[in-house]
Amino acid sequence: MDKNKFIEDFTSIFDEVEVSEVTMATEFKNFEEWSSLAALGLLAVIEEEYDVALTHNDIKNAVTVEDIYNIVQNQK
Image (cartoon, rainbow, N blue to C red; front, side):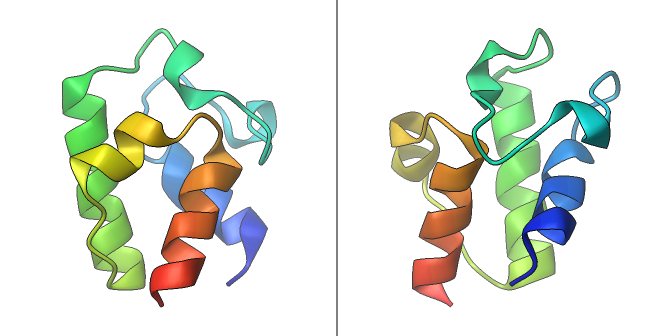
């Protein structure tokens, strides 16, 4: 799974976050746009793009983009 593509997919749920601002170490919950609605958007994007169903606990326990990436990677 390509990390750059994952970052692109991850940032697609935000209107004001640019791909260039995000790395695997980014703490995504610090984004001004982060909300429960963004979390639902993330669940949908991950399921659509990677055929992996994240849980709310997966997102709750994750801190960085890489945390989400690793969860997806482990479920594929």
